[in-house]
Image (cartoon, rainbow, N blue to C red; front, side, top):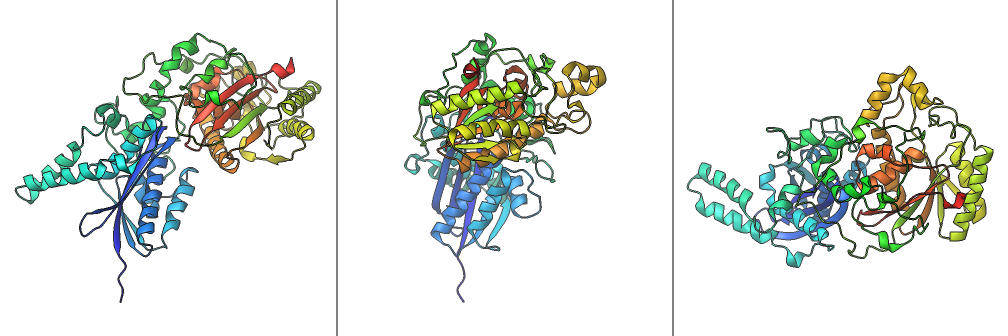
Length: 531
């Protein structure tokens, strides 16, 4: 009887910011000799730890399959999340994780892969590969196996630990110490510390996993618990974005506070904006702080805090990088006015579904004329709400295109606040409104949607559409909150930035999404076609 060969796959992934610049590493080992059979690593752009870990798993399994398609595979990872979810003991709820888990499960036939959790200090080979990939990405390059020292460092550490071990107990302790300290010169200390070790997935019903303490976390606090408490969302307030992610905005924070402006050119195809430093494109936004969906002016206390300096180890953002091909460009069009718009009333997806007003129809025709003159729109996708469909249809008639309806582009459900002005909500539901202004996790009165919920929905829609329309220019006709959320996520800005953007009826914004996961904000709140 023929016995299938056994392989070991060790995989890891990391994100410097969570979400932030991310990469993965994976190694295929011979279980009998410990020989490295294959290595994989890649910089994947901006992503979370969880996404990077799953991508590392997929890469490792594929490398093993390329070597021996009939192998029995033993996967070892320090991510409790991935191990428990792939073993079937934890549910996978988050939309970013489901397709990656399904992709991993398809590489080998069922029953040929088993999963084991191991401590992070035993996963140094894959961890170094992931850090090499992130370092390469910071330089605008992709990881090259010829430049990797991960296998050499790992083997040297093992050999040193074994030769120094006097007995089984002392040998185990020294091996762990050698592995933890080996290769310190291969990756700069700032690079190592910048990788968040959180492995807790907010989508799972299982407990959050304690990793190494995050930079700046209280003593004794595990980064997994500090960044992602059980049941929290990927898009949470400042504590979930992490100090690294917030600090990456600091280089532009001073200029942003000066409200410097950039003339709106309408050139959302220009390549010059690619990989601009975080926050650069936000300077095109001018106007008062407004409540998304209403235009009502507010200044929430949570929106006043900013970081003043960036850490020296913060990943550099450059203007150049590897050619990723043509991006998926989303031209973001807010619908024209309805009767509720000039009165600044909450108008979401949970109340009436108003039509465009006469002024709104004129705006829709004006934007249709402007987009026809530019001649770059290839597809049109619209929110299902009437005001967006009517705006989209006006453009589609001028361009000779069809309109696809996408439910993920609908406006926030504002619950009991639908149809009310900001002042009326303040009078009737003061405590609920204060909570909503203070936290993106708070829901409007009566069970509406929190901004955190909307961010998850919009991000999942963004990912689907960016994949479906890679290399194409797509008009998304939608609402205030989805557009502001797309811009916020593209800039890596905190949730309170939603209150700092002006977005007029029938305005045009644009964001480009590249294959490496980077996004470039090209335009914000252009209303030149209405003048």
